[in-house]
Amino acid sequence: MTQADLVVVANRLPVDRVVDASGEPSWRRSPGGLVTALEPVMRRADGAWVGWPGQPDIDVEPFEFEGAHLVPVRLSADEVEKYYEGMSNDTFWPLYHDVIAEPRYRRVWWDAYVRVNERFAAAAAEVAADGAEVWVQDYQLQLVPRMLRELRPDLTIGYFHHIPFPAYGLYSQLPWRRQVLEGLLGADVIGFQRVADAGNFARAVRRVLRYATKATGITVPQEDGSTRNALAKAFPISIDAASYIELARRPDIQARAAEIREGLGNPKKILLGVDRLDYTKGIRHRLKAFGELLHDGRVSVEDVTLLQVASPSRERVEAYMQLRDEIELTVGRINGDFDTTGHTAIRYLHQAYPREEMVALFLAADVMLVTALRDGMNLVAKEYVAARVDNRGVLVLSEFAGAADELPSAVRINPHDIDGMKDAIMRAIEMPAAEQGRRMRALRKRVMDYDVARWSRSFLEALDEAKAARRSTSAT
Ligand code: G6P
Image 1 (tube, helix red, strand yellow):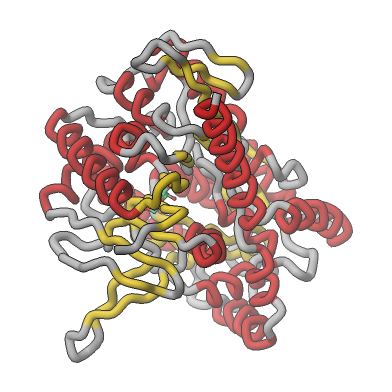
Image 2 (cartoon, rainbow, N blue to C red):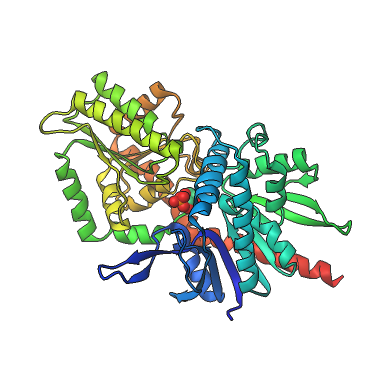
């Protein structure tokens, strides 16, 4: 039986199950950034990855994939509905994104969440070697750190929260606010995207549990009357910048970018939005601003086109179905009012694309619109910047995305302020090449210096330090 020195625990496995024409299933590496980030680390460390294969009711034995040991966790259709669609994506997701949509608090969802978290913790406990490090990922698994510590006190446990942690006034709505904090505090290192998220967490810990916190340290009382220290700190995630740069330099991808421009009728300026179709992304606000610019005559469809990629997401959750209807109605209205036979106002694509096509889109776009109402980080902003090897293009970036903390050279917006957003879009459209270059160089420097390898390295270093500190206390 495999015993791993480093175990990653995430809701999803780093592979997707694909079934070919003859009905034969196989596994394909998923396109996500976390997968790219952790792959080299996993290879080095005799790593295992515990996760859900992405479909209900499939039984798969642990298997090896590209140098990592993968441990599938089975979820029934009922659990997918209650733990994943319900508690994770209809309770935690909206609550943690500042209640942009109304969170629903259902006790049967919570029960399923506890049960499924127990299953992930048990699977991790089984595969972890003696004294191993375990790195738990994201809001679907907030109870795992504590459950795992109870099962395996020898492990050093990290947790990274990829989404925002809300202000206490909102967090306190959660009927299970105490259990979730206790769950997270089972970890030795708790990572957040922004300093503000770590601050919100520490405040919730003080208010709900009355534990002492000092800078990034939290004093956690133990059952035997002693205390231990947990670290709660910002580790902003990033992208594999080099791979975007490599793609952006490829002649076939540059040719594809020219073809995309051509396909849109060669407008003077192309604005681009790329998001999962999610209410946190501010797609409606963006469409409203663009529609008004057309209405006001500040831009015309001959000159400016908005290309909006909205990739399908969580399609069985009510709030997502509603959002899709609203967006598609709005796009239809705007296009109906302003399209000509030769030009379209908005080219809307409810599809997902491989990374090559994404880079071609980034190269084709003069202005990238990231208008999130709340976002843990927003990696699309970083991907756009990395892809602009020509030092051209303008990033319009919401101050409510975590990326705004690191990218001050973007054109900053408050997406709730429609007039302000309209002015910012005009400024981006009209920005002289020299200013574009100045800003883009500064943005690129940050993204290249702080790439995803650096992110995982700094988190794992903090985990190593926690492990060393545990050893020295247990030795005394
Ligand atoms: C966000 C979350 C991830 C999640 C991803 C896609 O980035 O932080 O945990 O995996 O969205 O959502 P999905 O529900 O399809 O996994």
